Structures are given as C-alpha cells and as structure tokens.
Length: 283
Ligand code: PDD
Image (cartoon, rainbow, N blue to C red; front, side, top):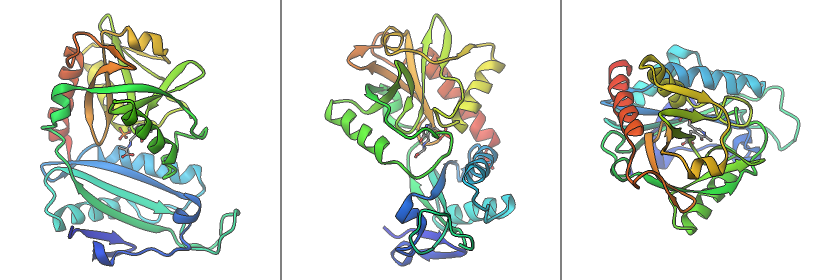
C-alpha cells in the first residue's frame, strides 16, 4: 500500500506516517473522528461532517485545530494526491501528546491525521443482495452522540455477528434497538419508515439526516421513535445508513427473513435518491 497520509500539517507516505506513543488518542481513546464518502472524486455531505466534528470536539472541551476552509482543502488535497475516485476519507483529531494522566493536559496541541480508503460505494455487491443482522446487547458507553474512537465494543459486536453467520449487529438496550455497530438502523412497516429518535443513545448520522430529509421531501411517512426487536423481525423492510454504506438493505434480522428476503422497494428507492442527490451536492 502506498497511500499519502496527512499528519499534523504534512502529506507523507503511509510508511512514514507516525504519531507519538504518548498521544492521548492511543493511551485514552481521547480522540474523535469523521468518515466522509467520496463519489466521483468529490466529498459527500461534507458540511454535515464538519458540523458534527465541531460538536464532538466541543463536547470534549477539545480545541478545533483547523477551520472549515482548511479542513476542506486538506480533504481535497488528499483525494487528489491519492487519485481517489470513490471511497472514504478518515479524519481523526486527538487531544494531543502529553504524559499519561486522567486529567486533560492544559497545553497539548491536537494531533490531526487523515487517510483515504478505496471502496466501491455506488456499485456495492451487498446492496444488491442486502445484509443479515443479529441482535447483540448494547454495552457501549452513554455518550454515543460523540463520535469518539472508542470502537472496541462495536468491533466485538461485529465479530459476534460474524460468528453467528451474519454481516452486522443491531444493538439492543432496555428492549429497544439503538443502532448498528457503525450505522443507523431503520425498519419499514405499512410504508412508514421507523428509526430511533436522536439522543445521547445513538450517533447522529449525517447520512441519516440527509436520507430522512430526502424522504420527507417526497412525502414518505417517518416515525422517529425506538422500535423493539420483535417489531424489527415483523417489519416489511429494513435498512441501515452510514457514510460507508449509504442506504444498505437488510434482508434478515436475527434469523427472521424480512419481506421476501430481497432488498425492499423503499430501501432501493432511497438508495437511488441518496446516490443521485449526493452526486449533485458533493463538493
Ligand atoms: N460510522 N452510528 C454509528 C455508531 C456509526 O459509527 C456511524 C458511522 C453511523 C452513521 O453515521 P454517518 O451517516 O454519519 O456515517 C451511525 C462510520 C462510517 C465508521 O465508523 O466507519
């Protein structure tokens, strides 16, 4: 792999990209991140990702090291340097380097790292077949609205899903689905889209916001409320959204076949709309 990576103001070959062992991102997961999709070499929903980054940093009393224009410029330069046509840009901001201590350091300089990943987003094979999910207890911390790099429990849940023959897990807390390991979760019943309302229990997905906006503009009924695993098993359709998957149909939930076991019409339509709108608005 010979990518160019951005580290603290420099574009370097990935083999030369380094951060300190004393970085608080490494020692304490004291870091936030964003993942932005790239279509036709352009950034999808970029303003939304910048707004959420600022919010995540603010919730952790972390300084925003770069203004919006600089962040856009760095994303674009990295896409250009790596010749990325379709895929993802990963951005991480940590509180910086300091001697290990539970108290935040007062004078640390944030560490900023960005890299690209090639991924087929528009022509995804999985979007044609749909994915299978299983339920796993949601044992994550209580501030899932902050996009931190504490991803071990989602990673464990993904592995449990795979060991149970599925593609991903839907996390369940107090008898209700919160979200997927790295995506927001939706069911469709009687032509109404049902997805959990925004709170500290879930990440406020940028793709979620865009998809719900496009659906509302087209008079699709939406209920933002928590739904149970039983409701999910009995749904007409289901899907997930994330920058890394766009709208991805779900065809099996905890062993129950959803609809006829193929991607449903609402998910397929929203996927098409999201792709068309994103190509138009990407920057
Ligand atoms: N994950 N919920 C969780 C827990 C997530 O990690 C993500 C995104 C989402 C969807 O958010 P968005 O639509 O803004 O991508 C919801 C990214 C893609 C990741 O960790 O790779």
